[in-house]
Length: 145
Image (cartoon, rainbow, N blue to C red; front, side):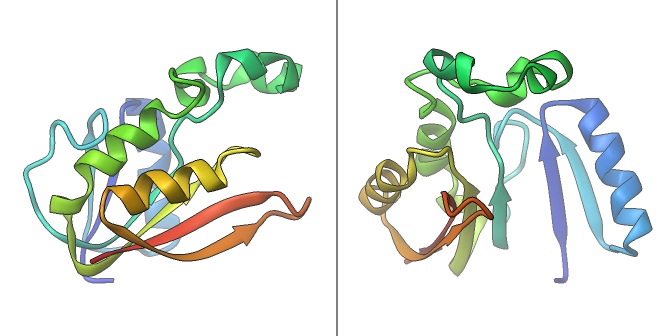
């Protein structure tokens, strides 16, 4: 990959990303403290990989106590039954992807079909679904048409 941008709303998360990039000899990386794309200048990338907050507050009882104690709730929970972040991404990502660029998203346990519908309606082509080790739909890949 020629250029890589790491974007997170958390400065602490970006500091960890910088350490990991150095550890894995990732060069030409840029780091942006931004809420989604809001503080970025429009530039096209080959790929966007995203693990947004996607848990509905209605599902808080399904989250382990350790996760609730140590993970920032901003990184876990999203409004609109966990779909808010995906709606922002679906409506904002295209200008940041090259033609044919891919968008890879982590998904909640019950969101894969909703995400497929949302991103196809936004003009993305669904490419592939990956399951996690528990055979739960976990990662979706889309392409910019």
